[in-house]
Length: 447
Image (cartoon, rainbow, N blue to C red; front, side, top):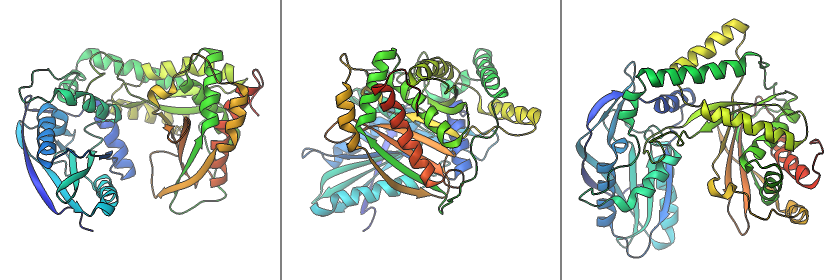
């Protein structure tokens, strides 16, 4: 199946052309891309209604790129330091893939996969890919991918929110800070002081932390990194019960359950998580179309019942969010200096990315114990993708589970040379059981 049967050149014209350094968020994700060799392209597929036309989609693409500087940026990543240049005008492509009606969905997935795993040409191209699948020349699916250097997940949400403002006259100003503006701001003394404060917090959190987080797996696999997906309606309900009782958000209860489960499996305490910080709570950042996400360090004291651990996590995670905004070069220097002082590096390659958004809210009336128990048999686990490399030893991504009932989906990527598949399954089960035990038996220590 050909990936594109034709290509439509879409012109754009926008303001704010110029050149400058990368932002801290861009440099952070570029380090991850270089370390792992992964593209980290993000996006998805949208089924289209019967009234969609190729001409309208091309016009939308042109207006979107014209309006948002992040989508018309060249990146010179081989320079030291790397630079970015916003173009005032140019052309992006709208790929068009012809398909039969029964093959349109497969054609869209093939194009999405091609977009995701093909690196962008940062030097001469732009960090946006749009393609449309047509059936008898009528669009059926829109496929979109962006470079993670241009936008993060909440940056894509900001793009979607801005779609009603894509009028040709540009009557509504663009909301939120732009990457080039932010990069210049981050070189000023006020932002440098903020970075230094964040890194002092990191160093204090790590200075007395035991260095080793994992042992050696007794069941290593090839490819090395495996993904386990756990779909749990019971976890969704149990988090709500504990959150309502303790007054902390469900995300903090889940982070506490993660800490308890990982400590059980590895025998290491306290647990550690690099939580992904959106930084969208900072002034001017909420509607920014750029990459702002950086990690924050969260040390989890797992001693006590889950209510107690969750309340500690609330304080630790809040501090992590406040200190997840820093210069990555200074961060790397701090970690190297700390390793030299201690005579060994500290393993903090554990990440938690909770992407549930509004579904993580606590209802006015929490679920009953009977509802939690009844949901337990509907938990499912399945092994999914494998890769030769990934972002860390243990990476937990949390999403709202789809299907006929509300659920939590845990996607755990793990290094099978450090954690066996059986241990990874025990982690997933342990997160669920820690929350369910706390929901059914308040005050009882997990396990």
